[in-house]
View 1 (spheres, rainbow, N blue to C red):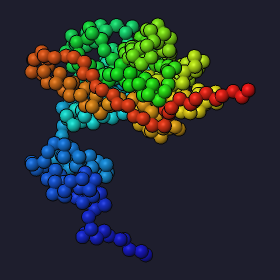
View 2 (view 1 turned 135 degrees about the vertical axis):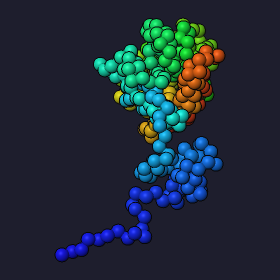
View 3 (view 1 turned 90 degrees about the vertical axis):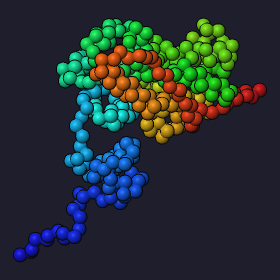
View 4 (view 1 turned 90 degrees about the horizontal axis):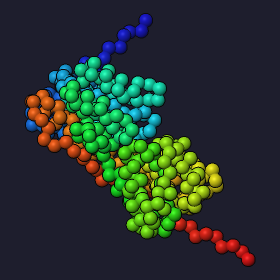
Length: 363
């Protein structure tokens, strides 16, 4: 009979964290890792967080002494997750909340599923400490803002990302949508494009309106177009690949050689529509997206886009919410509730290029 192989007591258990591995992953010294794992002082909070993240990534359990109790639940209400920009926001928000000791509760609004109001009701039933709304009904000019007034009256702190309503008394965090459209138009104008169109979401949404306003202003500044002439270059459609495809049809029929889009998914729809007509991107049509969603640099062609500052915006939103929570806990009235506006960044890749001169006809 074969004997039972016993582990060598001199060897560490397979799951035991090795200081060298953790130190390499966190890019700190082994001594720093040791101090964190033993709960000793003298380590910066950001460094401590890196070590804990490395421990998690390597699949090791945290020592019991490092498992802190949650400071409370925070709801995160987001749209459907098929658009990669929303999971990107959710991940950073959840990381930031965890860094403050709060446990995030992710709630997704999907067509035919729970409404925003129903999700908020469920979160309140669970006793959440606060709520983060991402691209919620606050961005819809047709939605009744009274739902947020009632939330304020019930003493629930919240913060709103992407969208603005002047009657809602809460912190807002947004990208500068107007500036995003203007920098996209300027980029295409510098490449020689004169007939430029905009494919953007429904006009009732604040981000869509702001992008359209920036676009119209940019066409006036760059080409002297009147407001009416510029507005005829705007196609309001759905924030989706299908929406971009539909908008592209009208803009291509109007002779546009450059199209600015309200999202990266819309831009992919524009590229698909162009190729369906046998047009080369960027040879015969230049396309600019918005968001710089994860993996968008690996499309064919790699998409030129206006990057939404996701990490900065998400971190600011969580910071504003934590301040609201602390103010309410101490009975203080918040001194400043405003809209924090973040500057986007143009990322030039392969979907934009110079205008191709029209071929000469042979006589």
